[in-house]
Length: 175
Image 1 (cartoon, rainbow, N blue to C red):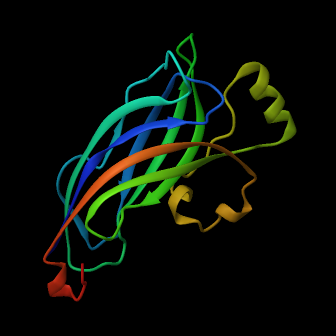
Image 2: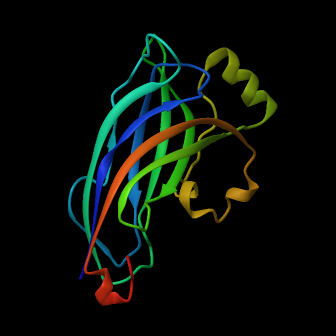
């Protein structure tokens, strides 16, 4: 079986309307992929930057997959959340990016977005907080019905990933 190692970190996020951010993340793969070691989902700590607008997490990612095919190449999906001074959490953005398909060191910028909702929901969000969320988070990376959503762009999340590939040449993949 071909093997893929993903070693890196979620560096942090910037460009969001407020600080005090944390990130929930996960990796989605096709049916031919098997996780040999590592955690395929997790959550960072909350960072409240003292200067600037970059929230630094430096959250480690270390995954080891085995596969017999390329279909369903791994994707990292992200949810960025804001925690206010009362401990309430509000969704600030969804995003996803493909794991690079070439070995080596990669720096990835993942753009994020969030659903807008109706004008009543937007008004309530300004005064009360909260806001619309996806019922099915699979829409983040599937794209099937995503085109129908009304969204607004949010900030970006920086990732640093090292990709190591083994035995892919036996399956016709040149690296």
